[in-house]
Image 1: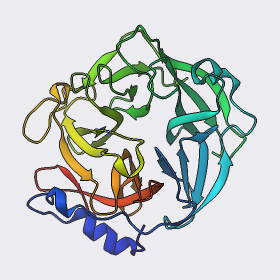
Image 2 (image 1 turned 90 degrees about the vertical axis):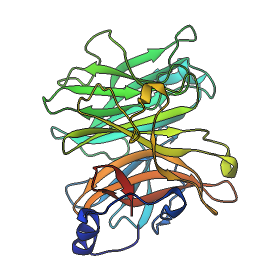
Image 3 (image 1 turned 60 degrees about the horizontal axis):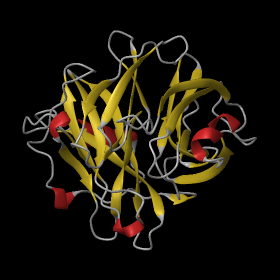
Image 4 (image 1 turned 45 degrees about the horizontal axis):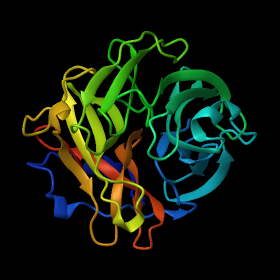
Length: 317
């Protein structure tokens, strides 16, 4: 991330503007160095001011940074392996799309086990007192999908609503983005209900991320195609709702369950396939954390300042 003082960044993030930039004016990813080869990132700011990033990789890969610019490898969440995921990964150790947060004195890690193109998938939970490699305790299966289901249990995202209720959104392709209720004391599923909150009639939609800002819950998703290197067409879209369970609508009023979405970020120039986003609240305001691909097809960490226009719609600065 480009170095800015907290004061300057706070001014940027709180300035009221008339409208979000047009798609072609999306800012380029902020400056980042070191171990920035990440995919499907999720990030938290620790109490000491440093940053922890979890992302798709062998047994869930970890990165750390002290300044949001220079990143280094911090091992994996499960250096001894995660044998409980084997039925969903065909015995592989590449675990996907973690959601990382800090609540109630613990780091919470929801993550996916699957194989590419299959909806024989599962989302698991682990917790840690420090977030460091090797300190994560397996807490159990949260939700799974089978080939007979019309949904896919990958790409988890935890949100806690204004009433203190815990929810997990997830999903990819198939019938779209889903949501289940969790028990706050355990972080595991509380009932059998599955809610639909976004979809493109079987089209490409993934990676939900829900945050509450002001009067609205904002649902960020990724449209189009990931995982094709420089040919990837991923882009970040958003809708909002007064209720955490929806209905979510785009700026033009189209429901996200009917394919709606307002663009926040898309590829341009030598930056391709921007997506799998995560909103991080920092001392200088909101950030959008995501991955993108270079012209050579390598995946990289992207971080940008996130602001809201006069109508309350998010855009990047």
